[in-house]
Amino acid sequence: MALLSKLSRSRAIRWGVLVVAIGAVALVVVALTRGGSDASAAQKDPAWCTPGTQRTALCPHSKVFVPKDYAVHGDAFECINFASQADAQAVLRANPTDPNHLDDGGGVACRGLPEPRDTTPVTGAAQHFACGPGETRSALCPQAKRAFDPRYFLRYGSDAYDCSDFAAQAEAQAVLRFAPSDPNHLDDDGNGVACPNLPGPKDVKPVQRGTS
Image 1 (cartoon, rainbow, N blue to C red):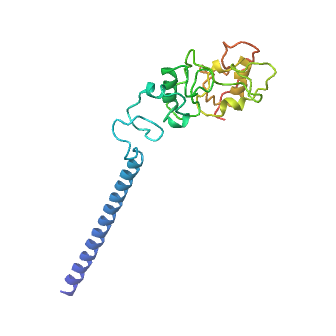
Image 2: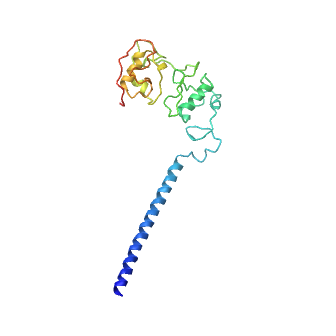
Image 3: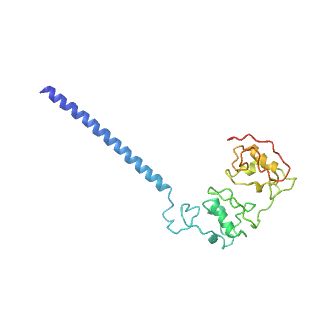
């Protein structure tokens, strides 16, 4: 009888440990599930971004965006008001006179905004950009006396400038040489030569492509 009693207590203890372990696992799963829900909720727009609210930097997940609504009130909006560079570009495309002064030069708006991006220049966009004394040489400021700093064309990170933004092929090549990872996609065929169709001066010595 004593042996049976000990066996019963031993089984009860093992079952108790098993139940506690299962309960602990269940609590962890619930916590992770709630954490995931909270993380998903954090990705949603604020409660006051009601259905139909236009997409902006404050309501970046809205599906509603009407570019022309931002192009008829004069100089009323700035780059920081838009959720993405593509949205700002759509506004510039809707009204190339650019009343909001969104064009960074060359028909491309708000290059520093996040993706999605649309850097296809808007033809005939009003040029409010002025070539100040310290501006680096570019297609907009092509004077030979100007200094050229490749870092200028890397300041916004990924795909902010195109070949049409450079005054000469050698300058596009200098940017590729400075950043072989080619965030601006100046060397799409990967042969180490940037923007071969730009005018001279030329620098066609290939850059060894990399990730630096």
